[in-house]
Length: 259
Image 1 (cartoon, one colour):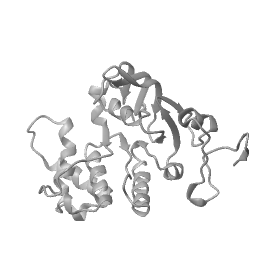
Image 2 (cartoon, helix red, strand yellow):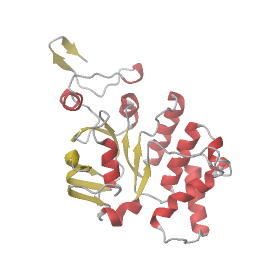
Image 3 (cartoon, helix red, strand yellow):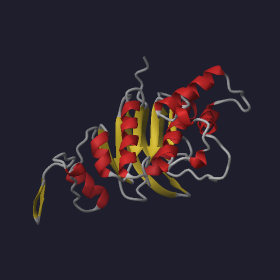
Image 4 (cartoon, one colour):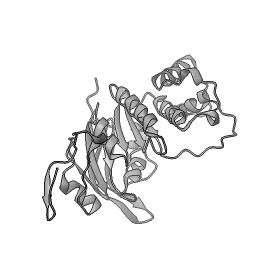
């Protein structure tokens, strides 16, 4: 078994058109990790994912995917972006959307073979969408489409899934089902997920990082007061789902003690 980290990032700086967004990022995503990243808009979360998959070239630093360069290792990555624009009237079926996941790591015009069809079927089964394989993607609900996009990412048999706000615009009940699905997938795939839903992050992931240009990550599930003040500039507290489950340790400030 290959024990290489799924993703290893050292001293990463990245941005757009000379404007630096990420500063000195160091992160190791080990196999079987399920990491949730939180942080403010514009803090660099999506930029980090784009850099990992090679859509954005680092200004400096190094990224390794399964011990390989990004160019060589990107086929080990399944990516689910936050927004997928499409024409709801365009006649493309669920099966064909998932099949598109094979394109990035294949020779041009390489035909689909029996093994590929089995891979696509298995990806659809994993997200419980096999019965709708012939349905037009535009006829699905938002939650069903999100499952299809996850299946598309799984079609490459990835070692790691990168997900950018996978439950954005989805109602809480459907979002819970998506997170349950990710929990099952995490038995065989490492996951790095961006989310603004701190309740969900605290309930489902194994460890949490905070990103606002710089990354604060200690490999565990607790988010300290110092981490949140570093990225948000003020104390933040959280009670998950109204239960006595917390990701923040007790802390004090001038107004008293917060649990």
